[in-house]
Image (tube, rainbow, N blue to C red; front, side):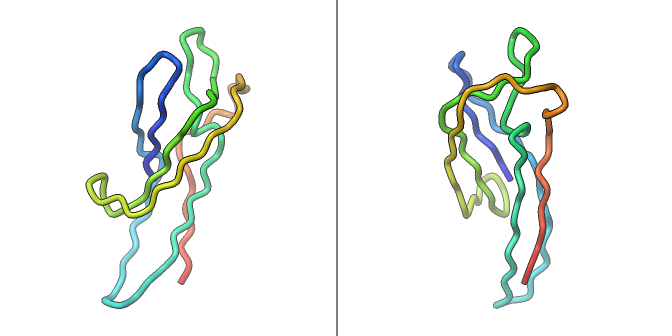
Length: 96
């Protein structure tokens, strides 16, 4: 799971927030679901606060950063989060 976020200071960051390897035989398919806590989408601001900014956040998944097969864009409301809400990784589950 790759996350691309633009911030109010004009910078843009891309981070890997989770991964899951899936072995497939030809013609097989599986579904991989990622749960992304809001704290993964936040960053530490200049004042040291954990900040969630409004605006587009792009979530992408694929076999590599050069082969992204699924992309979604989400947006939320601006807020300062509690430090214990900070997270760095998503979780994944695989189903047939």
